[in-house]
Length: 507
Image (tube, rainbow, N blue to C red; front, side, top):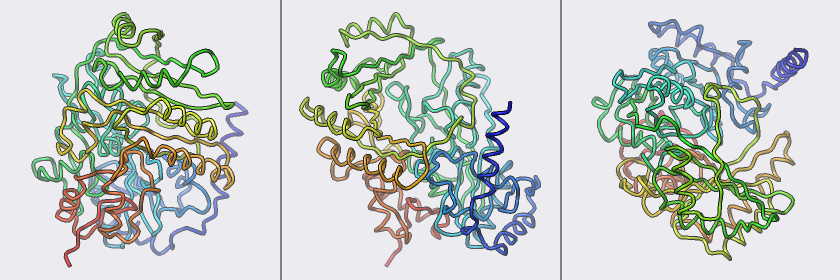
């Protein structure tokens, strides 16, 4: 108990010591508070609005910060945080932000890797969705309405309990991800080879647009509904809730993690080459992620995955298609899915790539060498194929479909503050990223929207030309259609941030 109390005291003191040099002018904060109060939502908004004078302000802000790089004394703080508990709170926030010339940041889970859901270089308001997390499951177990603040863990847990473990939903593996941002960027996970992405299983949405109107699929129109699925909803509106299509799953699934280390007689190069041969072609019920990391100049390959079936059937597939390896099944309690706040926060950087041709063994050896020289960086190789190759690139705004063997996530984590640690880890990440350039997609070098990466471009002046730099990497040929939708539904560019879809201004 003493340790817990001490930690709480230290954290409280830390919050109180954060400089307020980037605080918003008092008049602006007062004006926003008065505005949302005058708007008079049907559910009083005062108890859900936090300005910088509120003793809970920094706690609320920090609760859903997932990258400590963006929570320090030099980070500009929002004018206010509105922890919306009713759709009228969203309407009031939009109307008052527009009236006062404030930018809006929308946060559902806070996993925006480069902090764009709670950062800005100008005065802004954070619309926090964590109170809006209702999950309503259809009695027939075919569909469910989930609000944007619901986490994936809460969705999985409720769907499994309601269906006696016979229904699921294809989405990410991190239980703390918020449905709002995760779904709108695509939403991938261990069932994507069987059922596609989250957006491939979304059949309706409720939104609040730039004019504070509440719309559904029918009233918003098919173009906007298309854009919300993979194009990043924060460029167009606030998503209040998604209607998802539940998918059948066996009562029991099998998860596993196999690790190999280069100095134990197993050659990671051979295993990685074999993984490339089968990962996107294997049984669609089986998803195997390859993670590569290095320690003490030795590369470790980890094969983590899930099989939609029992372990006996998995071992049959394993022996037939991956002879010579052994997969030990594992178990995990379902209650861990309900944890909203992580036990510890970290500093991090993420990047992404797509691989469309097998990497040769000499290429793999070069990759392992660069990893052994940059041990703060790991790579997760996520296989495509299956359902992902069957859905056209234009079906939704998410374009990375057929032709991709696997997607790469580059990860670097560090645990101490300061410029030295950050500079070292960021430099290592950039070196590995550059070394991978011969092996990944080109013209454009594609990127995954949900792995936000400001290195590939920022739209500081809200121009089409700036937006196109990162837009074609995230969306390829779908970028131009997204610009057309944006120009039609939000011509004043109210919903904007550093990597939003730009408006096409006629000359």
